[in-house]
Image (cartoon, rainbow, N blue to C red; front, top):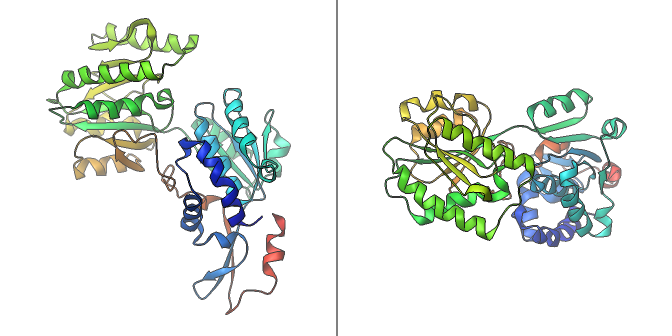
Length: 370
């Protein structure tokens, strides 16, 4: 099966999973063109400078998936299938249903290239050419230590994201709905979920809170979440702490669908997730120190008002790899640089051929491993 064949087979599957943000063959082709220059580089030698190059994909990829969001697992499997690799998925129990649903939607030829493992397998891990891991930093380090030097290793560790509203004086219902979309998607558990809504002192905090209450209540009615006992306990604890510290707080009582609090902390602290959003007024001159705990862990910054160049530089220094309008934090484009890295390229090994013509019959020999 050529890269063009795989594009045609995978495009209809992507439309069944709109969270991927891929809806047509051209999206997949653009993904390969951006990473490889030409999708045909996976099938044989293509022109490159004064010679020729061939992209070699891993024959087998071992994926270690996180227990929070299914979309990261779907995307990882999609990329492996697009490259033509065999894909072995170490999948936590809470995501096995979502991954099985994606696998079941694949056509038979591609379904054979994806297998959900019942548990961790040291033997299967050792047999893989590449290992892709999602999870906590400790998980990344653990699996990196288990890999051979010649194995390709790609790790996506802990990241946190922020919303910047700055000196918003006249918040609108449109802005509040955008913030609510970012907060409620995936129950605020992903690396692109806002952990804090940063304001400057003097912003219309209480007017914004009033609009957010309405927007979050509408989201809760439209897409309620059934809380597990441990989730409910985390939410109640966050509310109890906020009240004990005297912070202004609004919530929906025992529905446990959303919580807002205006914090006063010397430094950033993460939220417990589950739609608990902190509004953090921080003077601009203190912002670098306030955000210091996020150094190297900042992912996306949702922007709801003009972002000064000095603050853009600060966020970049902290590790930010994506700036986007408020309301779009959970829907990155297909070519998004996840953790600042281009898609697919980390998994590819290149072979160069120097000469005016590609080697005769090289396509069949070099590509036979797939």
